Image (cartoon, rainbow, N blue to C red; front, side):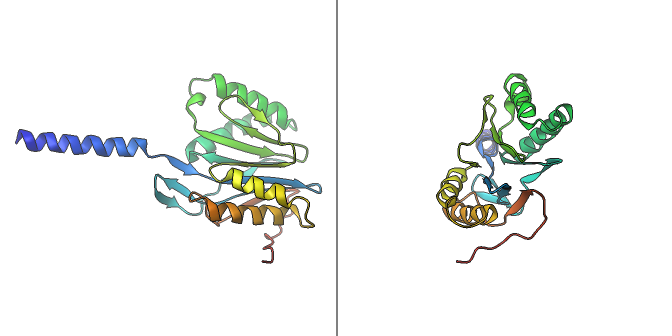
Length: 207
């Protein structure tokens, strides 16, 4: 009886370790700026360890007039950061850079916010910024930035396509397809936000 109880306790502890060590992944996000157009696109996959938990999560959204954002990492943490940034934008309207700097300060110093495991990508008509929990507020040199497990694949592809005679939306779509082909945590259920917000359907580039 004691031996059986010990075995059950051992199995239970292994299950607990598996459940706490499994990482939530919510990726990839790409922002492309070209010809006065800004496009932010994200895939819809949310994974827990090696399991796809949701294929159509929305990881990009509008954060206010003329501002869009996306997150990679824990979904709950990402939405928490969206709410914090929206509050900062209300405090500093039409000042995305100032709002992001203030959020980064809080994120780095606040005991609760420091535990949030996500990255943010935000943009308005003037600037694109990446925010991290280390207090970083980074602006891309070429108007292209990707975050998440497939972010570098998408970013590299988009930079290579910038000189082609295609729109920012087509560049984003092609680049995300490349990232989805290479990253197991990225699928092809893309959600998109644009500046200006013309609400036109996503253009599927010809192969």
